[in-house]
Length: 192
Image 1 (tube, rainbow, N blue to C red):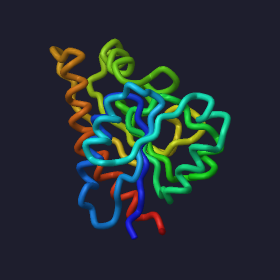
Image 2 (tube, one colour):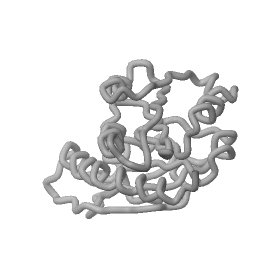
Image 3 (cartoon, rainbow, N blue to C red):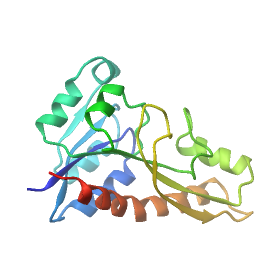
């Protein structure tokens, strides 16, 4: 029986797309559900293109009910993968899936992490600090933004002429190359 992954995303979902592609014909694991807090998120179209069911939820359902946990349990989800999901994960979900929620952050943590540090905000901060390199961090999720145990980090060089778009592109290349592979290595360790 295949292990089942749920993806949480808030926006376009380019990392979600790479995960969907990676696991489309995988012998051991599959993307079973895409969840979003944004009814206009392009990730819903991506899920539809791969014939993966999706669920849209609001703040009340996420933070004040157990409906999301019920849905995940019902679908026998083994691993939760955050792919550009911007809300803090509630304690009840973390307790239900200890060590089985993973996130990707567009910087080398612990620098440039925490509340409000996502997407372009991170890249602007990296540029403002004149960092010689940027990167990504794949980490487990705990009750705080970007503080869970690191799983994998990768870096890229920032040239002095690099603008925001170049830095974003370099970071996304790393994300798209490494996230599916790292998620696969994690899911292989989970006992069904």
